[in-house]
Image (cartoon, rainbow, N blue to C red; front, side, top):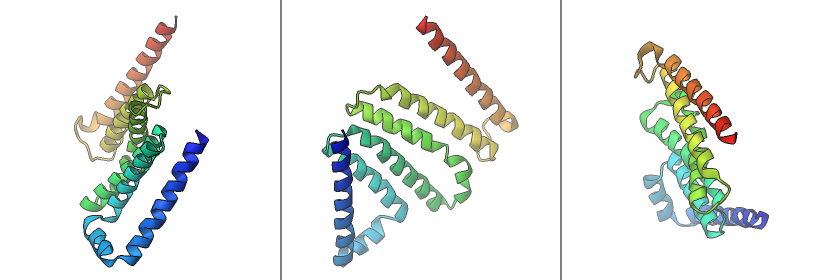
Length: 171
């Protein structure tokens, strides 16, 4: 497994080097990229490249860093597109969801380390935290002024119920 990771890193470095040389030597490529890929979308593309390299070298676990990089690129694109840079006060909670999405994708691609359930849990926790923080910082008024408190209570009930259910299954 260590050899696959080293192979993936080597391929990433080679492809990035070729990419930078191509941008310097081919003016048409540089102008096309300036029009079609804004800088946050470059980060999303790098996440896609990480996933592709992981698939090529047979390392489905690369889906996790690929999802994180692509997700952060998506957040940055949103912030730039809508000029909503203050949204970082609650957008950071989505990073847990990106990790979970990467785990789910890795499990679907054949990484048999039971990452599917853990990934779904992280995505659920991330979604709840996102809603709580967005409500707290005033961007989400779904439940009114009590929204963050209600969501925290619901999250706590879910965590307690889940712990009791797992304890019951173990007996």
